[in-house]
Image (tube, rainbow, N blue to C red; front, side):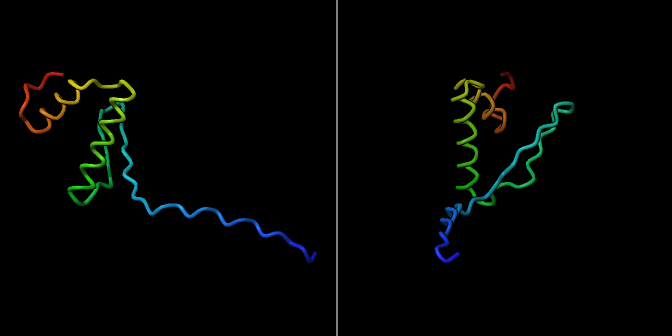
Length: 79
């Protein structure tokens, strides 16, 4: 075969980091074995996660505020 057609090269995937989150429903334990190691990346991951929860109507604006307050020990602890 002399006229062999070359397959196109697959597109190069971007270099991305992955931060999986695991939830044990029996114990409510959350494991995130890899976390961003700088402030800006951590803020992006957290912000995107909150956006997804809001867009999918899993949490409301107030729910997210209450969680943030609990995490910073500023809130009353109620959701």
